[in-house]
Length: 434
Ligand SMILES: [Zn+2]
View 1 (cartoon, rainbow, N blue to C red):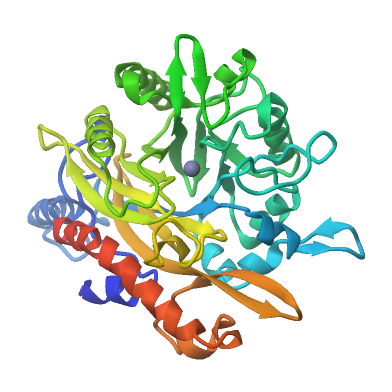
View 2: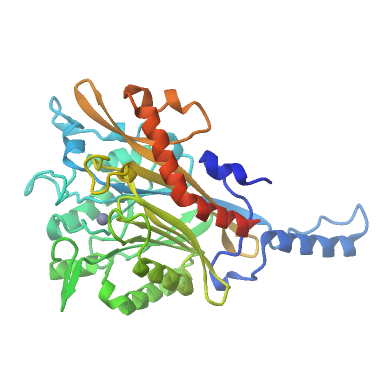
């Protein structure tokens, strides 16, 4: 199978070769191809007759696959709130944001986005955007309708509405039957989530950096109340050893509960930087040593590269997308801290897991669908829409790009920016898979 087209087209064509990614103790460390070939050869040698009983399935036969799609921040700035408010009904409807990305999100078995706001209601504090985000609950309905199965809740804005915001956010998500991880409503809730997707148990954790830690005080952007500390998965850049110990404990718990693959969603890095800093790289390497299979990062508001990391002993491989960028925001090219347009860009990053007959689970496919936030005027209002940059067809007249003068040109620029950042990692994975 030729793989070259999948990256440049940015159409989610999955690379179907196995590479030896997966927890080190999941079984033998051979590629699926080699395992199948070896098994087939020995069966043929001992069989001989055309009427012999059916050859047993090789241990490396794939018994199921599961796709995990992840996108970046739902960063609900003031103009996104006001432009999606219906004065007649007094309610919000954010579904228009997802109109075009929806069919793509729905293609995948399990889809995740980062909820970079609180859902604190508007009894005590108003709905508001930056710097202390408090978003109407309707964002959850829109994300769910678009096909997202889980929202990440541990980030530097988790505490923007205080303890009540943390509690209510989890309560609303639970009540609306939306999966979430990162923060929780009570200490009894698990600080991770194991999701069975097509028979593959994907263990997932979400952590955020703390903006400051001083003694027993921890700060996201706002200081956490003592009662809130155990409700948020956070770590201090100044005490990474404690973070690593905690991750180790969680990994063991998840494995005991049957996790086949391990995914870490992590909020980290420097805003508006197009490359990961040394601390991100250090943490990623450590996570590889600890057995994490996939790292998906966020927070920089721009996409950062995809890296395929090998453990020191060469036995474990970790896929790390350092930052997923903004799924939706009002960080436009002319408003953002960098004027390159990267803050308008997002990505739907797709990981395929395969389970073999012997129980091993491996990452067997990666793909990237670049997305772009299209902002244009319609009926006197500003529309914010996530555009899937599926260049396989006639992009020019699709996805509402025709509604703004430079829509198509700007979308193509966005596509090129994103592919320039992630193409090397995709190539590297392809090389390993070949
Ligand atoms: Zn952030």
